[in-house]
Image 1: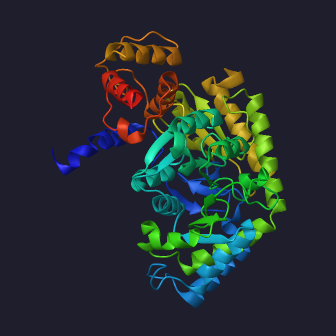
Image 2: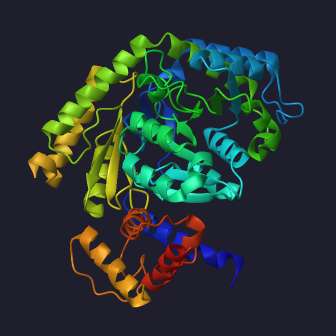
Image 3: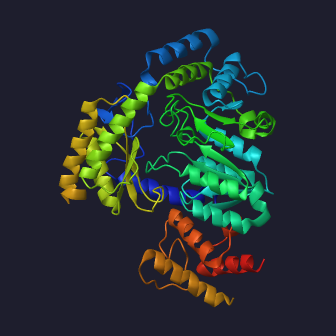
Length: 399
Length: 80
């Protein structure tokens, strides 16, 4: 068997996708017009499938901070945080994250993916047990796998299922790590964090919450779902990314545990990679300030989210009950999902098409997201396009 | 518990969760013959754990392809 024979399945997938009139994995943005619009396939398109929740990618202060950092500090650090890659700005961002979360310890990683890999592989080893939500992000799963710990999956958002598994683990439960997310990125549903904390309190163990998609959106200060539910003292680790609400790239972990500082010496994904570029750190720091002062941005994104959710309920689309800036529209029929997605694109609305096996329930999904950068008119355009497509394709109420 | 009995129970569980009768045996595969997507396998395995009151780690499942394989894992963990 050749090295490349393992790509047979990938080749078949590529062939299937390439045979589609528009390959959903090969969308090219030829020009970014604004935080909510881009040129796709030659036409101006409303971007309703991003993670730019607060619309900060074109914030003038963030851009100015990035440009200044490029001019003053150069294009890259060229080294690891453990060697020549720690600039004072990296430490300033870590201090600012600690203040933002009102937690004593913070650590910055080069990406959100490497934050999860870096924390999980440092916290866990082959003697440990980790309980992971069945719809946890790939980076959480990969981190758990790389650590060599025993992985136990429990049903998505099911505290009772978690409790059963911890109960069956017996004595091991008190040293286990529980891993969940805040807002889930595909269906836009939220973790029942209070109930998970109750289970943790009953059985022991530690709780890690990935707030990648909830940072900036939930809580009085925008810290995320943990703050929204007033659980800042009950969660052991919060991880997240700069590449969504903060509009840049990078990842972080904050914690009440002083051992977080020792993770720097034990985390290979942290040690063996170049640190974030100065311009990235600068835009992230500026964006974090915007989140702190971001009540207006949050009000806007939530207004848009409620407006879109109400319209989708009216259309009787197959969506979850949670109102959030992310709405996953489920389809049992993969071809219909693809046709609708393609029609939306041709009407100038970009959404995310999620096909099996990536969709949570094994079906197909169109993921639609709104941001603070979308105007009311743009949200209305998204709704009008969905109405038209649903009518033509016999979906929902218009079936 | 007899392995065939475990296999039978595993298949009945899947029939219950899919809401339809299935023609499967111990040699049927979860992904191919039963037609499950990988994410559905995870959900199904959670039901298996609850039905047999066991907790199965991912490593133990790494070589599971058929219902017979899964029955062997459930039997082993049940007896530990």
